Length: 477
Image 1 (cartoon, one colour):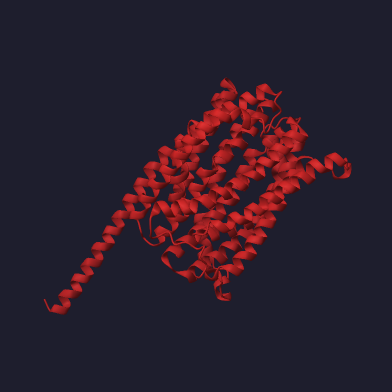
Image 2: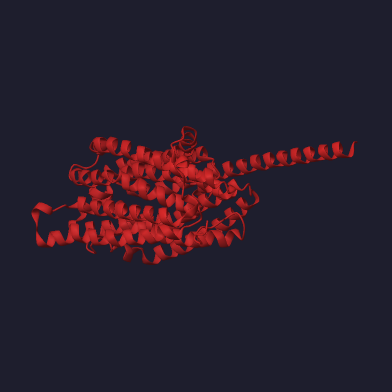
């Protein structure tokens, strides 16, 4: 294990370790969001508001399916982090190999099913008639790229479980730059030269995202195979193992469902917003893209805590879990306040990146959505930090139940409030979901810690009793 980018998070200052892991993670997520922001800016500027609404109307279904893929891959990486913390490298390689086998199966099945059903889902979601064809053209290509999503997230998840958050960043930078170039080629250049047969429209943005992610995943896989000695496995270690696959599914599927369950609530909310018309859809699309970009540090903290929790759980360093939690929450709270200040001061200017200055009503709606969310960023800090820490410790079902709380809140706002209060109610949907999840997660975390401490104390007493018995036997008493 000579690679210096691999990091053991079971010893040393939790604050320094978390911050050191967090910085590359946040840059990686920012570049990943650059994919979506570039798509949105180019689509909005060159293809118009209707095309922007087409892409935006797919946001919740995109989150449900692609989020499941990402959650499953993150779940498959948790046992790898735990075995790394426990220094059982043979078992680590078996988990990595079987995770790869499962990812291939999941990717094939999901690609087939969702590509066949995606138009029906768009119809069920009450997608406005003037944008449904564009929405289908975009999301169908994104779903064709599900294998690329699995590839990149599986490989990067394994690498991060070893404490290396830098390497995935480098490949994401390459992927992001490639995505920008492909967006410009498929939308702007082809439109300027008016090659009708190659006029891809919104599907061009989708192809740019899929191709760039596939390139990033393949390059990352090749690098991982050559660079990380701890992952060089024998044929026996790479053989599919039913017991290990069962363990991986027990952890990975709930993590995937956590994203999908939350997305169901988002879909209900999207249906309600769709009923307000394509202008409201376009405003929420632009605002969501900007908001997601500003929320990258919260997601990075979450991913950091999943690795931190996994390694320390594997090493049975329970005392470090609380220390890490406090450090991560403090970092997140500081950033939340800074983000609120920036969005309050520059929200209008940021919105103009996506929309024309003449669209005054849309610009106002975008700023309203952004500021409403920003006032509740500290509850979002707790959602990400506590949930991912619990996941890294192996308690993925708790995270699923937190997702149910989010789903209920989002669906409740969509069903009950949006029809009466319109777009303003939609702006409060995510904050309501974060607060609902926090109530469940905080109580769950302290319950888990109490249980683990009691188990550890019982183990300590049993060892002491065994040791004392042996001393009595040796002394003849």
